[in-house]
Image (cartoon, rainbow, N blue to C red):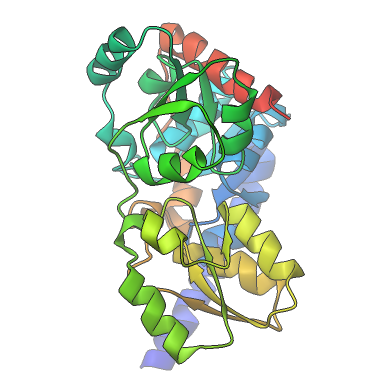
Length: 312
Protein backbone atom coordinates (compact mmCIF):
# COMPACT_ATOMS: atom_id res chain seq x y z
CA UNK A 1 0.00 0.00 0.00
CA UNK A 2 2.80 2.37 0.89
CA UNK A 3 4.50 1.79 -2.47
CA UNK A 4 1.22 2.49 -4.28
CA UNK A 5 0.72 5.68 -2.30
CA UNK A 6 4.21 6.86 -3.18
CA UNK A 7 3.65 6.03 -6.82
CA UNK A 8 0.36 7.95 -6.81
CA UNK A 9 2.02 11.00 -5.22
CA UNK A 10 4.86 10.91 -7.75
CA UNK A 11 2.33 10.87 -10.61
CA UNK A 12 0.41 13.76 -9.02
CA UNK A 13 3.60 15.78 -8.72
CA UNK A 14 4.51 15.05 -12.33
CA UNK A 15 1.15 16.37 -13.52
CA UNK A 16 1.42 19.42 -11.26
CA UNK A 17 4.87 20.23 -12.64
CA UNK A 18 3.57 19.98 -16.21
CA UNK A 19 0.69 22.31 -15.36
CA UNK A 20 3.08 24.68 -13.64
CA UNK A 21 5.23 25.00 -16.75
CA UNK A 22 2.13 25.82 -18.82
CA UNK A 23 0.97 28.46 -16.36
CA UNK A 24 4.40 30.08 -16.06
CA UNK A 25 4.53 30.54 -19.82
CA UNK A 26 0.92 31.73 -20.01
CA UNK A 27 1.32 34.26 -17.17
CA UNK A 28 4.94 35.24 -17.88
CA UNK A 29 5.62 34.29 -14.28
CA UNK A 30 8.73 33.73 -12.22
CA UNK A 31 8.91 31.57 -9.10
CA UNK A 32 11.10 32.72 -6.22
CA UNK A 33 11.64 30.25 -3.39
CA UNK A 34 13.32 30.79 -0.04
CA UNK A 35 15.82 28.16 1.09
CA UNK A 36 13.43 27.17 3.89
CA UNK A 37 10.70 25.97 1.54
CA UNK A 38 9.75 22.33 1.00
CA UNK A 39 11.98 20.42 -1.43
CA UNK A 40 9.13 20.16 -3.96
CA UNK A 41 8.92 23.97 -4.10
CA UNK A 42 12.67 24.54 -4.33
CA UNK A 43 12.89 21.97 -7.12
CA UNK A 44 10.58 23.96 -9.44
CA UNK A 45 11.75 27.46 -8.51
CA UNK A 46 13.47 29.75 -11.01
CA UNK A 47 15.55 31.18 -8.20
CA UNK A 48 16.32 29.85 -4.75
CA UNK A 49 17.89 32.09 -2.18
CA UNK A 50 17.78 33.94 1.10
CA UNK A 51 15.90 37.19 1.64
CA UNK A 52 18.61 39.41 0.13
CA UNK A 53 19.04 37.48 -3.13
CA UNK A 54 15.29 37.13 -3.61
CA UNK A 55 14.73 40.84 -2.97
CA UNK A 56 17.29 41.57 -5.69
CA UNK A 57 15.59 39.17 -8.12
CA UNK A 58 12.21 40.75 -7.44
CA UNK A 59 13.65 44.17 -8.26
CA UNK A 60 15.35 42.99 -11.46
CA UNK A 61 12.93 40.54 -13.08
CA UNK A 62 11.15 41.20 -16.39
CA UNK A 63 8.33 38.81 -15.49
CA UNK A 64 4.79 40.13 -15.20
CA UNK A 65 3.98 37.87 -12.25
CA UNK A 66 6.13 37.00 -9.25
CA UNK A 67 5.13 33.97 -7.21
CA UNK A 68 6.95 34.32 -3.91
CA UNK A 69 7.27 31.05 -2.07
CA UNK A 70 8.17 32.24 1.37
CA UNK A 71 6.33 34.10 4.10
CA UNK A 72 4.14 37.17 3.85
CA UNK A 73 6.75 39.87 4.51
CA UNK A 74 8.83 38.50 1.63
CA UNK A 75 5.90 38.85 -0.76
CA UNK A 76 5.41 42.40 0.52
CA UNK A 77 9.06 43.24 -0.15
CA UNK A 78 8.73 41.92 -3.70
CA UNK A 79 5.61 44.02 -4.28
CA UNK A 80 7.29 47.10 -2.83
CA UNK A 81 10.31 46.70 -5.12
CA UNK A 82 8.21 45.75 -8.16
CA UNK A 83 4.95 47.71 -7.73
CA UNK A 84 3.89 47.29 -11.36
CA UNK A 85 3.97 43.49 -11.12
CA UNK A 86 1.45 41.05 -9.73
CA UNK A 87 2.89 39.31 -6.66
CA UNK A 88 1.32 36.06 -5.51
CA UNK A 89 2.00 33.93 -2.44
CA UNK A 90 0.83 30.29 -2.45
CA UNK A 91 -0.70 30.47 1.04
CA UNK A 92 -1.56 33.77 2.69
CA UNK A 93 -1.38 32.13 6.13
CA UNK A 94 2.41 31.96 5.75
CA UNK A 95 3.30 34.62 8.30
CA UNK A 96 6.38 35.31 10.42
CA UNK A 97 6.05 35.35 14.24
CA UNK A 98 9.22 37.46 14.55
CA UNK A 99 7.81 40.09 12.18
CA UNK A 100 4.70 40.22 14.38
CA UNK A 101 6.80 40.94 17.48
CA UNK A 102 7.41 44.57 16.48
CA UNK A 103 4.59 47.11 16.16
CA UNK A 104 4.44 50.59 14.65
CA UNK A 105 3.36 52.38 17.85
CA UNK A 106 6.18 50.84 19.85
CA UNK A 107 8.75 51.70 17.21
CA UNK A 108 7.51 55.29 16.93
CA UNK A 109 7.76 55.68 20.71
CA UNK A 110 11.33 54.37 20.61
CA UNK A 111 12.19 56.84 17.85
CA UNK A 112 10.84 59.71 19.99
CA UNK A 113 13.04 58.64 22.89
CA UNK A 114 16.11 58.45 20.63
CA UNK A 115 15.65 61.24 18.06
CA UNK A 116 19.23 61.09 16.79
CA UNK A 117 19.21 57.35 16.16
CA UNK A 118 18.89 55.71 12.75
CA UNK A 119 16.42 52.84 12.49
CA UNK A 120 17.82 49.65 10.97
CA UNK A 121 15.18 47.01 10.34
CA UNK A 122 15.83 43.40 9.57
CA UNK A 123 13.99 42.52 6.35
CA UNK A 124 11.97 39.99 8.38
CA UNK A 125 9.39 42.66 9.16
CA UNK A 126 6.12 44.05 7.86
CA UNK A 127 5.78 46.78 5.24
CA UNK A 128 4.44 49.11 7.95
CA UNK A 129 7.62 48.70 9.99
CA UNK A 130 9.81 49.15 6.91
CA UNK A 131 7.97 52.44 6.29
CA UNK A 132 9.18 53.67 9.70
CA UNK A 133 12.76 52.68 8.89
CA UNK A 134 15.86 54.48 7.64
CA UNK A 135 17.39 51.38 6.09
CA UNK A 136 16.66 47.65 5.94
CA UNK A 137 19.16 44.82 6.13
CA UNK A 138 19.32 41.05 5.85
CA UNK A 139 21.49 38.61 7.77
CA UNK A 140 23.75 38.64 4.68
CA UNK A 141 24.51 42.35 4.78
CA UNK A 142 23.58 43.50 8.32
CA UNK A 143 27.15 44.27 9.36
CA UNK A 144 27.87 46.25 6.17
CA UNK A 145 24.62 48.19 6.58
CA UNK A 146 25.44 49.16 10.18
CA UNK A 147 28.97 50.16 9.23
CA UNK A 148 27.72 52.26 6.30
CA UNK A 149 25.65 54.60 8.50
CA UNK A 150 26.95 57.99 9.57
CA UNK A 151 25.50 57.83 13.06
CA UNK A 152 26.60 56.79 16.54
CA UNK A 153 23.24 55.41 17.60
CA UNK A 154 21.14 52.62 16.06
CA UNK A 155 17.62 51.45 16.79
CA UNK A 156 17.61 47.79 15.73
CA UNK A 157 14.42 45.81 15.09
CA UNK A 158 13.14 43.16 15.47
CA UNK A 159 15.62 40.28 16.09
CA UNK A 160 17.59 40.60 19.32
CA UNK A 161 19.84 37.60 18.56
CA UNK A 162 20.97 38.94 15.20
CA UNK A 163 21.26 42.41 16.75
CA UNK A 164 23.56 41.13 19.49
CA UNK A 165 25.69 39.35 16.90
CA UNK A 166 25.99 42.47 14.72
CA UNK A 167 26.83 44.58 17.78
CA UNK A 168 30.17 42.76 18.05
CA UNK A 169 31.28 44.40 14.78
CA UNK A 170 30.53 48.03 15.59
CA UNK A 171 31.28 50.69 18.21
CA UNK A 172 27.90 52.28 17.60
CA UNK A 173 25.34 52.22 20.40
CA UNK A 174 22.55 49.80 19.50
CA UNK A 175 19.09 49.90 21.04
CA UNK A 176 17.87 46.38 20.35
CA UNK A 177 14.22 45.31 20.12
CA UNK A 178 13.23 42.13 21.99
CA UNK A 179 12.05 40.00 19.04
CA UNK A 180 13.41 36.65 17.93
CA UNK A 181 12.93 33.84 15.41
CA UNK A 182 10.91 31.06 17.04
CA UNK A 183 12.73 28.40 15.03
CA UNK A 184 16.35 29.50 15.45
CA UNK A 185 15.85 30.52 19.08
CA UNK A 186 14.91 26.91 19.94
CA UNK A 187 18.46 25.71 19.36
CA UNK A 188 20.33 25.24 22.65
CA UNK A 189 23.87 24.68 23.86
CA UNK A 190 22.80 21.17 24.90
CA UNK A 191 21.69 20.44 21.32
CA UNK A 192 25.10 21.41 19.96
CA UNK A 193 26.98 19.48 22.66
CA UNK A 194 24.97 16.31 21.97
CA UNK A 195 25.49 16.56 18.21
CA UNK A 196 29.21 17.19 18.65
CA UNK A 197 29.51 14.07 20.80
CA UNK A 198 27.80 12.05 18.04
CA UNK A 199 29.77 13.66 15.19
CA UNK A 200 33.17 14.73 16.58
CA UNK A 201 34.66 15.42 13.14
CA UNK A 202 31.85 17.72 12.01
CA UNK A 203 32.10 21.49 11.82
CA UNK A 204 29.30 23.48 13.45
CA UNK A 205 27.72 26.14 11.23
CA UNK A 206 24.92 28.33 12.57
CA UNK A 207 22.71 31.26 11.63
CA UNK A 208 23.15 34.48 13.65
CA UNK A 209 19.43 34.36 14.52
CA UNK A 210 20.42 31.66 17.03
CA UNK A 211 20.99 32.52 20.68
CA UNK A 212 24.36 34.19 21.48
CA UNK A 213 25.57 31.23 23.54
CA UNK A 214 24.89 28.91 20.58
CA UNK A 215 26.56 31.29 18.12
CA UNK A 216 29.63 31.32 20.40
CA UNK A 217 30.03 27.56 19.94
CA UNK A 218 30.05 27.62 16.14
CA UNK A 219 32.97 27.12 13.79
CA UNK A 220 31.19 29.37 11.29
CA UNK A 221 28.39 31.92 11.65
CA UNK A 222 26.54 33.36 8.68
CA UNK A 223 23.38 33.85 6.70
CA UNK A 224 21.76 30.88 5.00
CA UNK A 225 23.58 31.67 1.76
CA UNK A 226 26.88 32.12 3.61
CA UNK A 227 26.42 28.76 5.34
CA UNK A 228 25.74 27.05 2.02
CA UNK A 229 28.79 28.66 0.41
CA UNK A 230 31.02 27.87 3.37
CA UNK A 231 30.05 24.20 3.41
CA UNK A 232 30.59 23.94 -0.33
CA UNK A 233 34.12 25.38 -0.14
CA UNK A 234 35.20 23.78 3.14
CA UNK A 235 37.56 20.78 3.18
CA UNK A 236 35.42 19.26 5.92
CA UNK A 237 33.13 16.39 4.99
CA UNK A 238 30.66 16.63 7.86
CA UNK A 239 28.63 19.54 9.22
CA UNK A 240 26.26 20.13 12.11
CA UNK A 241 23.84 22.71 10.74
CA UNK A 242 22.11 25.28 12.93
CA UNK A 243 19.50 26.76 10.64
CA UNK A 244 16.10 25.79 9.19
CA UNK A 245 16.05 22.30 7.74
CA UNK A 246 14.87 23.35 4.26
CA UNK A 247 18.47 24.46 3.70
CA UNK A 248 19.34 20.80 3.35
CA UNK A 249 18.03 20.79 -0.22
CA UNK A 250 20.66 23.25 -1.47
CA UNK A 251 23.41 21.93 0.80
CA UNK A 252 23.03 18.42 -0.61
CA UNK A 253 22.65 19.70 -4.16
CA UNK A 254 25.92 21.65 -3.93
CA UNK A 255 27.86 19.09 -1.90
CA UNK A 256 26.52 15.57 -2.55
CA UNK A 257 29.74 14.06 -1.19
CA UNK A 258 29.31 15.64 2.25
CA UNK A 259 27.14 14.80 5.25
CA UNK A 260 24.84 17.29 6.96
CA UNK A 261 23.31 16.78 10.40
CA UNK A 262 20.75 19.32 11.53
CA UNK A 263 21.47 20.36 15.08
CA UNK A 264 17.89 19.76 16.24
CA UNK A 265 14.81 18.03 14.86
CA UNK A 266 12.89 21.20 15.74
CA UNK A 267 14.66 23.41 13.20
CA UNK A 268 11.52 23.57 11.07
CA UNK A 269 9.60 26.78 10.34
CA UNK A 270 5.94 25.71 10.12
CA UNK A 271 5.03 28.96 8.35
CA UNK A 272 7.52 28.33 5.55
CA UNK A 273 6.26 24.78 5.18
CA UNK A 274 2.58 25.67 4.57
CA UNK A 275 3.40 26.26 0.91
CA UNK A 276 3.36 23.22 -1.36
CA UNK A 277 3.34 22.38 -5.07
CA UNK A 278 -0.45 22.08 -5.28
CA UNK A 279 -0.95 25.53 -3.72
CA UNK A 280 1.70 27.00 -6.02
CA UNK A 281 -0.14 25.75 -9.11
CA UNK A 282 -3.48 26.92 -7.76
CA UNK A 283 -2.09 30.41 -7.10
CA UNK A 284 -1.12 30.76 -10.77
CA UNK A 285 -4.43 29.31 -11.95
CA UNK A 286 -6.55 31.69 -9.85
CA UNK A 287 -4.02 34.56 -9.62
CA UNK A 288 -4.72 34.56 -5.89
CA UNK A 289 -3.78 35.31 -3.14
CA UNK A 290 -2.25 38.59 -4.31
CA UNK A 291 -0.03 40.75 -2.16
CA UNK A 292 -1.21 44.33 -1.72
CA UNK A 293 0.69 47.13 0.00
CA UNK A 294 -1.00 50.56 0.32
CA UNK A 295 0.89 53.10 -1.84
CA UNK A 296 1.65 55.51 1.02
CA UNK A 297 3.29 52.68 2.97
CA UNK A 298 4.97 51.14 -0.07
CA UNK A 299 6.66 54.43 -1.04
CA UNK A 300 8.26 54.86 2.39
CA UNK A 301 9.18 51.20 2.71
CA UNK A 302 10.70 51.17 -0.78
CA UNK A 303 13.16 53.90 0.20
CA UNK A 304 14.48 51.79 3.10
CA UNK A 305 14.84 48.71 0.88
CA UNK A 306 16.55 50.59 -1.95
CA UNK A 307 19.04 52.07 0.51
CA UNK A 308 19.85 48.52 1.57
CA UNK A 309 20.40 47.38 -2.02
CA UNK A 310 22.80 50.29 -2.56
CA UNK A 311 25.14 49.14 0.24
CA UNK A 312 28.14 47.36 -1.27
